[in-house]
View 1 (cartoon, rainbow, N blue to C red):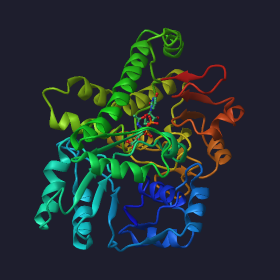
View 2: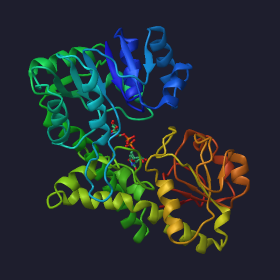
View 3: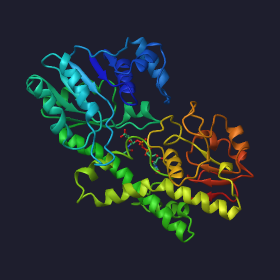
View 4: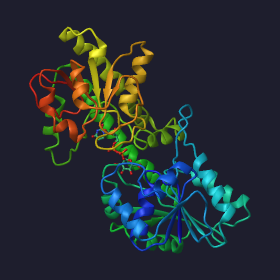
Length: 406
Ligand code: SAJ
């Protein structure tokens, strides 16, 4: 039986996927409310295909509890935040979860850490926890790092089809865990050592962060001299070896806006390009705020409360607001002692910020200028409702005359 520890954005789909593919699974989370929701037959976040997967897993007998189980395999998928000052990984949740596993696990158990951690974290923080409990790693407990790779918005498909990395001290243990993941994973599964697995995960997200930063920098250069960044990227990408990403209002989520900082924190004198890239991305909400004031001036608009931000989540068609560019922009606005921007997001049904709306038409009726922060399908399907408004489109998706861009 597999005990999946942490039933959040990664742990829950992973547990459901395994259970749906014939593995006996019990999911554990310390959050009683979350466990109660799952036990009441409801999922805890919106994700394409998740409800169906949940139903399949329930039919297959998955169980949810707050208790750690006595079993032979544990998958730890708890969050790894970063310390905003030191920029280093904060492994406290992983450490606590492994400590709790050590209290119940029998000798011979395998502990798989799926949470993203910076290179060296397992050596520095996880191994000591196991050893302090009197276990010898490799003899009594097998330790494995199998970082997740799925993208919010397409998690279920990617869980099935993405290639995976498994890091283990011992090739045979790596192969054993590979067999477990092969129960559902149709991609290639590479077995390597733990430190390499730690590094690959962080490097993958850093690659994307640096490339988004490049696109954002191009947007700034093009804005400075009034060139069309989208046309330029489109033409450049016709070159066989060029593939530039898209500029946007900032980078959110719990991965690309966080993981690269681990490398900056650990290698401050070496990770220069990464450091600059992260600063560029983090500066985008402020850049958008300046654009708003610039456009308001040009259009003779004076009332900030007649300006509305469309989108609160960190990207399209998800309900996840972690590190969202809109939240960053609102914070920045408050720092400048200005408030009043209106906000709406179809995926956020609870009130989380000031001046928030829950209906597109009412929101649009109350604003003269709309800033498209997130390219949800809803706004793509309602472009006509924006005609007559001043529009700042941060994603180049609104095809109307006179639309402004970042
Ligand atoms: N973004 C841009 N321009 C782009 C692409 C993205 O500004 O061209 C922005 C998005 O709007 C969003 C942010 O970047 O705010 C991140 O979005 P994303 O869709 O690129 O990635 P995440 O954070 O949802 O998921 C990433 C994925 N990593 C990679 O693609 C290398 C996913 O595979 C990982 O599993 C996930 O991080 C994670 O959990 O680490």
